[in-house]
Length: 353
Ligand SMILES: Nc1ncnc2c1ncn2[C@@H]1O[C@H](COP(=O)(O)OP(=O)(O)O)[C@@H](O)[C@H]1O
Ligand SMILES: [Mg+2]
Image 1 (cartoon, rainbow, N blue to C red):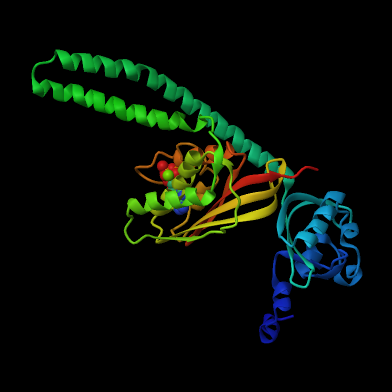
Image 2: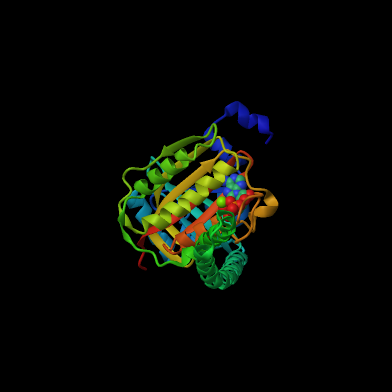
């Protein structure tokens, strides 16, 4: 059908026909009401054959998913299930991410995207191993530098007390000043492995604190917006670590030249991080309208020492990621010119299966 036909009718249903994302609609008995051509392609089924059929049978979905779909019908909240296993009509196994949203009429809207699970896990593990190795190397170097620094500083102080001329003390002050600067840098490199001190906190205190800090740094022409979900429950976390992590992300956006940075918060049901499924997670979005992260940098962005800025250390994201990891959370991002979104997921409730 030519594109113009769709434009003339202009109905939402017909837009679904054009989407590349597989979209399905299930009724309350989990029977297929509708699927778009992308879904027909992905699952190798034809609309005519499967409409009215019990969807979990069509794709041989596991009992856990069926239970979750039923939960969604009851609770009326959307969820994303990552790395689900489904089967096509020809019996091929496939791994997908599936977002389920209850519709107003009480049906379920499913959006399905294929992921190659083995590739993705291998990729994530590869990243983790590399990051870990890089962090350990850094920590090793940091320790090696830190130890003699104390001696250096102490000796310079002793020397200073023995000196008469102010002119000569100038030199010892340079030594002491530089030793202090290196100590601070090294402390930052060693920093994120502190054990978190968890207290019951409100995520919005964290976000507002970051907002006031970045505000005080007065980046010219920068506007800081927010949309918070005030109903997010308090939870146990180390507020100082969270402030530092969010600050690193917001600062990066500001330093990249964003005009507008939006801080958002909400909760999300049924979310998988690593190998654990969480019933409820906090989701923090940091959205900026800056130039975006160059495509060739995106793969490496969380590695220490990777920086796109002349005066950068390349530590900010690596530190932020490990601080969030210490809370069993994860940072992800998407970036294109004009819109970069860093998203922090922090688990609230584990799902027990
Ligand atoms: N929001 C963003 N927009 C554009 N580029 C970004 C953004 N966040 C991070 N970057 C890129 O990632 C690099 C690494 O960031 P980071 O680890 O914080 O180190 P640093 O800020 O010291 O360079 C930055 O130098 C920048 O090139
Ligand atoms: Mg940074």
